[in-house]
Image 1 (cartoon, one colour):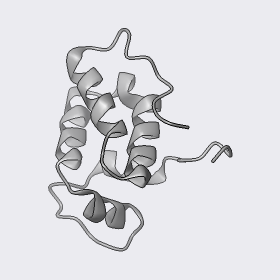
Image 2 (cartoon, one colour):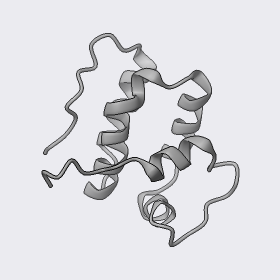
Image 3 (cartoon, rainbow, N blue to C red):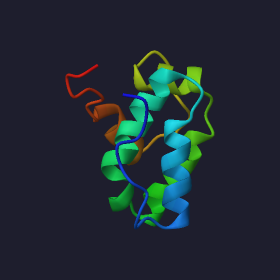
Length: 96
């Protein structure tokens, strides 16, 4: 898998930009975690959830990966319901 499996057709500019950013993080692990989540959920996220995702994308990859794997705690203003959904999202479909 080299990137998104979701077309950006039908998405507004904000969602298109976020989908791209989720798949182009800088580390492959974060591309897969955030990219697969975005592929599945970007079209259904509320404006508040999109804002939460934008905030998460500002966290550098090593810190965000450590928080997702449970090795680090991020500040409360960064984490929330969307972060919990990302942590719980299955990142593999068995084809990795």
